[in-house]
Length: 202
Ligand SMILES: Nc1nc2c(c(=O)[nH]1)N[C@H]1C(S)=C(S)[C@@H](COP(=O)(O)O)O[C@H]1N2
Ligand SMILES: [Mo]
Image 1: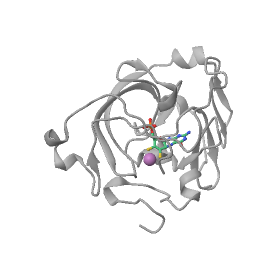
Image 2: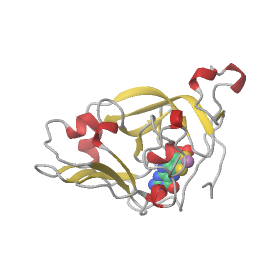
Image 3: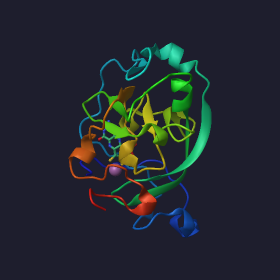
C-alpha cells in the first residue's frame, strides 16, 4: 500500500507518546510519509474549485477563491495509516464539511470524495458531518504540499488515513454505497482504527 514513501517534518518523539492515544497495532512516527497509489496530479493546481453533487436539493460549487473565503479553522488531530504508522498532533487548516453542506437537504446514504486521478473514498454522511471531516489546504502552517494532497485534501481523522483523499475536487452524495479505491481492493468499508478494521471482514 506504499508505492511512494518520503520523509518529511519531525514531530513528537515516540517515547513521549501517550499509549492511550495510539490505536492497536500502530506505532508512532515522527515523519510524515507520502503514500499515494499513483503519481501526484499536476493539472491546473491553481484553478480548481470545489463542488458538491448527487443526492441534494441543488448542486453546490465554489471557485478556488470562493472556497478560500469560507470560514475555516485550525485543528490538531492524530492520524492513523493502515500501514501502521500513527502521527500525533498534526495541525491542519480547512473548512468543515458541515459548512459545505450547511442547509442542504440530502437523502444520501454515502458521501464519496473524488479527487483528481481516480482515487475515491466513501463514508456514511454521519461520519463526515458533526465536526468529523474537513477539506484542508494547509498543514503545519504552510500551504498543503502537492505530494500531501495540495491544493486541498480531505481530513477524516477518526478513520484510517486512506479515507482522507488527497487532491479532492468535490463530494458526490450517493443513494447507495459504492466502495472507494482501497475498499474495492480488500480494505475495510468503515476503517475505524480503534476497532482495527484494516481489511474487509476485520
Ligand atoms: N488521492 C489519493 N488520496 C490518498 C491516497 C492516494 O493514493 N490517492 N492515499 C491514502 C493513504 S493510504 C494515506 S495513508 C494517506 C497518505 O497521506 P500523505 O501522503 O499525506 O501522508 O493519503 C490517502 N489519500
Ligand atoms: Mo494509508
